[in-house]
Image (cartoon, rainbow, N blue to C red; front, side):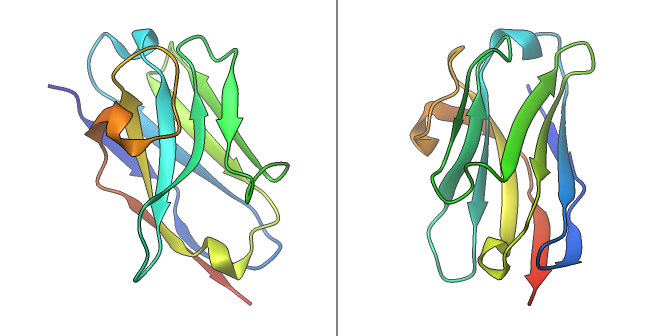
Length: 124
């Protein structure tokens, strides 16, 4: 069983930054792609960013491209999401998830393990 635990959320003003972390249990972390998704109140969950198993390939939603950076440290079983220039519309619960394969896709149905989420609130 894989457990994913997110941390780093909080309340920030628009324009500021936060870095989310997601620590994974188990010894197979480095074999799988990882992703970040978010869900705002009253909205469906949406893709934010994904990274492949080596960290050599990343994908971003258009809404965060150029402001967010996903990275991973396989030695620490951790994936990160650096969020810069945050906007109020970024207020949501952010979830990390493990892809069923190595690639890090954009569709949430590709992901089989999910964390409990961490709240990010961006004030204007």
